[in-house]
Image: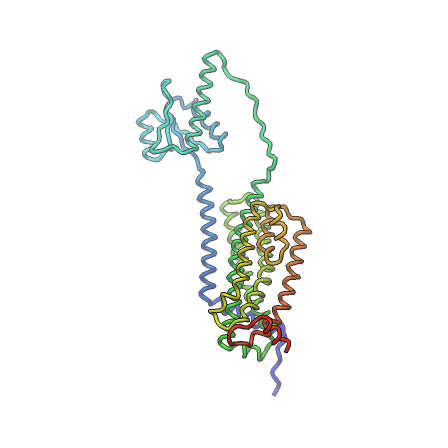
Length: 396
């Protein structure tokens, strides 16, 4: 009879990772959170579409010389960046009927040399009033010039020069980055909590004693982080794919290439941020044995995430400011600040490389120190364990 084959470290880590993925996929909290995030994302896209469609055509009816009024109204609309649809109407009765039926937003009555009048149902919108007022003023000036024998004035064409033609595109990238770090913040909190809750559940149920009979603490820790990390990575990739596809399908952005680049950047920073925070959440959770005590030990880490998110939002207003620049290099803060700076286009390649290297060094230190704390505290299932006691127990 052959002896049972001993599994290697990689196989044990994969086994724990598969167990975590299987357990969380069936977890109601994970399913609900995933659905809520997707619904919020789709709702945001729908809101952008609705707001974008709100600037549709301004429909203006005219009673009078439509051949003269139409080009003036259209020219005025073009100058104000308002799409104008001009409809000729026979008389005031037809104008009132068109307004009541919703065929036009307002009617300009300028017939027979009488005082021009704008007829609306309740109130005139700002764009409607601006277009009509500008057109009436232009016609009035033309009539007064003609009355004194001046057919027209030779007005030079205005040349418009943009000093920052890419400002709108930068703004779109920053908005995408803000949405991205919002999702990133939510997922780091969510999956950090999943890691912490899993550790406490295993300690309180004594399952951890059975697991540690077949594997080392670091293998259990690595399996948890890898398993939930793959699940979180899959979730943020799906969210990014839905968001990018929706934005492109509804033509919400003018820079598809940069949009995809910003989404990829957010996903990449999720990997680094998750490795950093998941290790801290797991180590903190190993210090307690009850779910009731979990909130107190993970609160400092949660507050760091909140601070990072707030700074990331502030960085969108001043991506080149001292606060944004300095915090984009600080491990733990950089995953939620650097994507915004990258989206604004103010980050050199060496800056991104430095932020990534510092983050990797910090992850290595946390995993090394955290693994010792985790190993020393994991089998202490009564009350809270102090950090110093956990380190001493690991050395014994």
